[in-house]
Figure 1: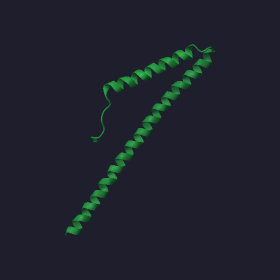
Figure 2: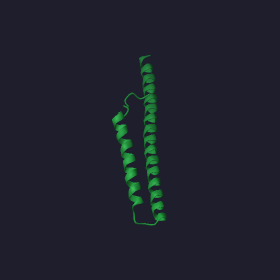
Figure 3: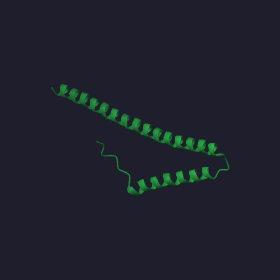
Figure 4: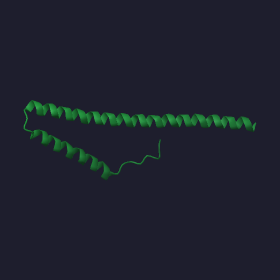
Length: 93
């Protein structure tokens, strides 16, 4: 479909997974060792998990909106090109 898109390298994909796992582990350990009651720790953990889920959802939505606008632009360009081709054929006749 779109030949301009290059896939991510395996090193980059591995780095992103390692970064996510590392940051998740560090936040979990930090919350575990906080000198707070269990219910406060649980509330903080729930908030952090919802923040991560919201970031993933927002990122996917932004990417989907961008890709759909690219498709709409390609369709508009094809329509314009077809109109110009038809206008060129009318002039030639």
